[in-house]
Image (tube, rainbow, N blue to C red; front, side, top):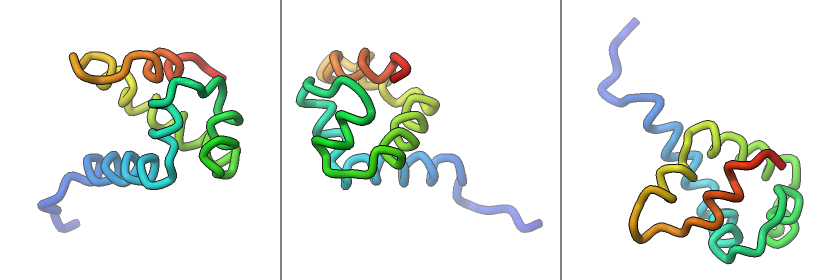
Length: 85
């Protein structure tokens, strides 16, 4: 098998975050009004099953924890994401 110059995991993580940003999921979370994956989907206008999958993948990547550890990052959405819905 030929070695790649690109780390596949990093690319997948970037695509996941890009999808969450482009779909509006991150904006809904930043508003602080989201209560569950279903509510996030309703506000963002996305499919609830797909939203739950993306949210679970973001939590698995520990993206919300990374945001809450930054001084300028929002803490409320990160805490919300950390809880199972």
